[in-house]
Every structure is written in structure tokens, then in C-alpha cells.
Length: 601
Ligand SMILES: Nc1nc2c(c(=O)[nH]1)N[C@H]1C(S)=C(S)[C@@H](COP(=O)(O)O)O[C@H]1N2
Ligand SMILES: [Mo]
Image 1: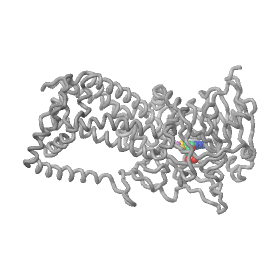
Image 2 (image 1 turned 90 degrees about the horizontal axis):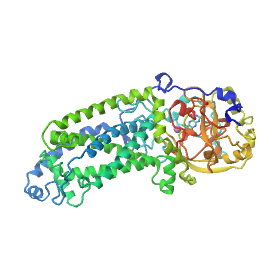
Image 3 (image 1 turned 90 degrees about the vertical axis):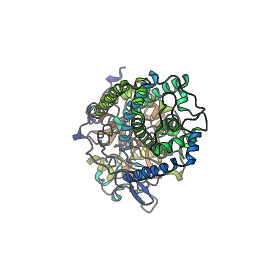
Image 4 (image 1 turned 180 degrees about the vertical axis):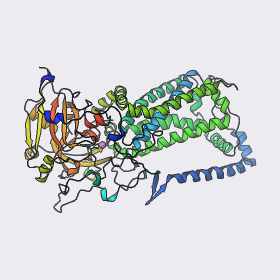
């Protein structure tokens, strides 16, 4: 039987899914919200990071005075004779700057700019950093948006009988609850890609796709480095690198710039910083980046408790700072120490005083500037294309990661005191009526490619085998939280309705609308549905599921990012294909916000 001929039994619901634009349009997107100058919390005080400017200035000037003084001492003369800046035993590189090295250096630069910008864009979707996994408001140590407004923090209240009050007094308008979307900020389009608020979808495709190219380039670089004598440039082979680096620091800081020997040797200070960048900072960024995903965080097992997502995110941010500072200082030094010879070496591969390097460098800069300027307008106009290219480049890997590891379960005491909320509550009169009666009249419709279509009442669902689990939630925007969920395993539902052989996906239809109109939905493959921790939850932290978190029923699919867990579920349809639903991307945020359908990374 041809699966496409089966009439969809949930036709009215399907009809309420909307098409979506292929570009980002200001009119139908979240309105802009500018953040503030980044601040760092010290105790109870928030300190503006711009203080760093005068502090660095004072440190630089004082450093010059101190190093000038040191430089003139007889002690330093003796020290300089012993440690001129390059260890005496350091082998000289004979191959200069070969073409492969120059090309990889350029590609690295090109990729790095995209990675940094898209990384900042992702950060702007939850403009706070924490050391704890819970992301409780006021516990952030860094932010570039005001504090979460106290009167808009959603707190579940206890009714005195040990039950969380099930409903909010009236359906809460979105403006009254500070959701994680409310928290996202606009950044300038020249800085982020594309700067527009809540464009984490396209930004992630950029970040991951270019990362893939960057990693490939890095692997080629490591390989060539060790296949030739070039590794001597970067890898110190004597402890003398440290006193020599100190010597270089005093020389530079006292404004005595010694002759540059880069053609055959980097000085000890260059060697240490380049070594750190290539062999420590870069792998650390890859590791801490991946550790923020459910697939890898769960793979870490209990190590994921001390090395939780927010710590990884914080360390990842320090890595970002390192790369930014490195690029600025490295670039500055090229120009103040030995501009022409350095450009000749790194861009033309020649060791002379010609102008050759400058021309090639100028062309490279033109390419970098052009791609920098085009990235944002191109992303705004062709967000769907970015999504499709991203899927080709990294989609398969993200999909494969769904089954990489079992999901970790936590202990009661790990439960987060605060759990962010996201999305907009259902507003239909139908839902209000159900909600008013405590969902006694609620029916979950399960239909489509199943042998036994069913309508299950709330009471029937609660009478089914119940499973409880304490798990970590990973929102694509960057926050996380641990909660205990109770509900019926999806496996049990599958046993009842028995999907046919043609069924490949389960579509979850919400009662709520998405931000851009049309009902919120998401599509999961059946393997996710058979996962031992996939449940239809009606309890949270031992109490009835609060309305804002998805009552009467919400999906928990623990190996995916949060947006895939549809709240306020009204129906489930089993289908063969999802191309004909909505805009065909496999979910509301996939259609409207350019997310991927399989997202365990
Ligand atoms: N119907 C509906 N379900 C939804 C959303 C939504 O906007 N509408 N948001 C998703 C996102 S992005 C996340 S992170 C989780 C948040 O769940 P919580 O509000 O219980 O924290 O719900 C998901 N389910
Ligand atoms: Mo989310």
C-alpha cells in the first residue's frame, strides 16, 4: 500500500500548520531587544567590563616603566646574554614558510572569523554565563542583559498539601512570564551572524559547518607539521623556553624589539603562545563545545556532573576570549615588530625585503572583508539555504549522535531550584475550557499510520504504567536545568496503537501556537519514540505538570534539545514522511526558525 494515499485523519490539525518564509523578515520575527555592556558579577555587584580599558592601559604603562628599569640593570644584561629569547638548543627550521602552511594559515583565519561571530550570536540567545547547571536567575556571573525581572520569574507555588498549584490563575499572557526567548538579545549585524535577535538556528549552522572545515584544516595542519620539520616552530623541546619567554617579555615590554628570526625560529614567547593556541586552546574549544550537547554531555556519564553544560559554556567563552585577544595581539605585533618581512614570509613565503607579501596580504584582506560584510545580509536573505547546506555538512553527524549514549539520570538533590520556561501558552477557548475543568474532558488523539487509532482520556493515561526520571534539559538557547518527570513511556503507547510498517515518524501537535502563527508541532523518528526515557509527562518534580511547562501532557525525549519536546500535546500522528507538513522541515522551529530536525548536538 502506498503510504501517501492514506488520508490523514488529523486533517484539521494539519491544516493549521503554517508555511514559513525562507528568509528572516523583521516583521514576523522577534522584535529587537538590545542588551547592555557586558558585566561581571563580583559578590552582589555587577561590574562593567569596560573598566578593563583603563586597567589594561595602566598595566601596560606601568609595565613599560618597570621593564625599562629592569632592562637597564646589570642583572638583566647577564640574563639577556644567557637567554636572548630563543633557546640556544632550539633547532632552526629549514623549510621557511611552505605553501601548505601559508594556505592553512589563511584558511584558519577565514574560518575563525565565522566561528567567532556565529559563536557570539549563539551566546546572545541566552546572554548569561553560569558556573552552575541550573541557570537560576541571579546566579549568573556574566551577562549582557539586565537581570531577569523579578516579577516575571515563573515560580511554581505549593498549595500547602505538597502539590504544586496546577494552573496559573488565568492563562498567563506571554508578557507576564520571562521566558528564555524574552531573554535573547540583538547584537550588531557586523559582529554576530546575523545579529538579529534569536537567530540561534542559522548561527548554529554556521558555527558547526565552519567548525567542521576548521577541524579538517586543523587535522591537515597537525599532519603536515609533524611530517616536516615545521613542528619545531611550535613545540618547545627544552625548559629553557620559559626563561627565554620571560626575557622576550621584558624586551618587548621595555619597547626594545630585537631582530626577528621567524624565518628559522619563533622566539620563546611566540612559541609558547602559538603552542597554547594550537595544542591547548583549540582542542579545549572543540571539547567544551561538544560538552554542551545532550549527546556528549550524556556520554560523559557522571563526569558530566562536575563538568556540566554551563561550566563547559563558561570555559568555551574563555576560549573565545583567548582567540579574540590572541588575534588582536598577534596581528598588532606583526605590524609593529617586523611588518614587511613578516608579511613576505607568511603570505609570499619569501625571506627578503620585497613588497610581494604585502600584495598577497592585501588580496587576502579583501577576501576576509568581503566575506565578513556579506555573511549577515546573505544569512538574512537565505536562511533556508544556510539550513540546507548546514544539514548536508553536519546534519548526518547530529542525527547519528542521537543513539550515541544512554541518558544520565540524576538524583533528587540534583533537581534545579529554578527551571526556565519557553514558548507561548495555548489561548484557544477549547483549551481554556479543558484547563478550567482540570483536564477531565481532555482526550489525546493518536492517529495516522497505526493499527489501532485511539482517543485516550487524561484518567486513562494516568492509569497506564508510570515512569519517573530525573534528567537534564538542554535548551538550544544555552540554558539547562534538571527536573524529575513522571509520565507514560512512549513505548507503552506504541504497544497500544501499533504503528504500521509504513510509519516512520511521530508528529506531535500542540494546542499552542508558535511565535509566528500556526500550531506548534514537532516530528520525531520512531527510534526516539522507542527510547527507554521517552515519555509523555504529566508530572514535574513530583507534582502535576504546571501549565507553563506543558499541562496536561508534554513530551520528554531526553536525547534531543528542548525545542523538540512539544508541550500542551493535543494529538499524535504517525506518518511516513513529513515533507508535506507545515514548511516540510519536520517541526515548527525547524520551519520557522531554521533549526535542524535531529538535534542531539
Ligand atoms: N507547544 C510548545 N512546546 C514547546 C515550545 C513551544 O514554544 N511551544 N518550546 C520548546 C522549547 S524551545 C523548550 S526549551 C522547551 C521548554 O520547556 P519548559 O518550558 O518546560 O522549560 O519546550 C519546548 N516545547
Ligand atoms: Mo529551547
